[in-house]
Image 1 (cartoon, rainbow, N blue to C red):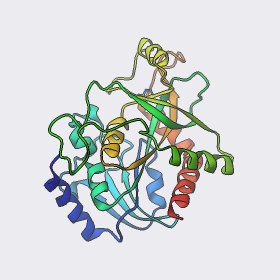
Image 2 (tube, rainbow, N blue to C red; image 1 turned 135 degrees about the vertical axis):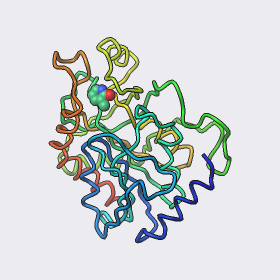
Image 3 (cartoon, helix red, strand yellow; image 1 turned 60 degrees about the vertical axis):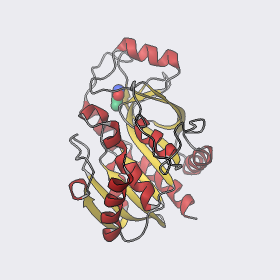
Length: 273
Ligand SMILES: Cc1cccnc1O
C-alpha cells in the first residue's frame, strides 16, 4: 500500500473531521447501530474518500462516522469490506492504514460470526483471544514499506491483553456474559460445510467468519492495539439442521445490540480516561 494514497485519504478526512480520532471501530454486519450513538457526528460516505472501496453487502451502510463516544474521539466504519466481495486484501485493509495515519492507537474490530464452540448460543458475545487465518493469503504480501511497519510483524499478541482485560472487567461490571475464544477466518462467501466446521473445531476454533483477520494483521503491522468482539449470529453448519441465512446473521446482531453497545461503550469510556 503506498503512503501517498493513505495520506491523500487522510488529508481529505482531516478537513472534515471534528478532531483527530484516538480509537477506531470497525462495525460488522448488523452492528453499525453503534455508530448512531456517536455524538457531534460527521458522516462521510466511502465514495467521498479517495482510495476507499464501496461496500456491497446488505447490513453494511458504507460510511465513516467520526465524532465523540463516551468522551473519546472516535472514527467508526459503518460497513466494512470483505475479501469475498472481490476486493484485494490491500483494498479491504486500506481504511485501517488511514485510521493509523489519522492517529488511531486502539482499534476495536467487531463481526457477526458463526458459533463453532458447542457451548455457544446465537446472540452470545465472544471476545477474540486469537485468530486462525484460513484465507490462504495475507494483506502484507508484496513489497514492505518500513515506514508502515516491519517486514515480518510479530503476531504473538494480535489481540491486546490489556484491552481484553478492560473488556472482561467491563462485562463483569455490566453483568454481560462474555465468552472468549479463537476466531477463524474463512474466505466465503459460501458458508462452511459441516466437515469444515468439524475441521475448524479440531484446529481449536471457537467461532468462524469471513472478515476481521486481514484488518487485524494490518493493524498489528501498523503498531495499533486491537480488541476483537464477535457477535455469535448463528450456529455454524452442522451444529443444527437449519440452513444458514445472512438475514439471520443481521437479525441476531440486531437482537443482541443492547449488550454489544453497552460493552463497547464501557471499553471506550475506559480508554478515554
Ligand atoms: C459469518 C458466518 C456466520 C455463520 C457461519 N459462518 C460464517 O462465516
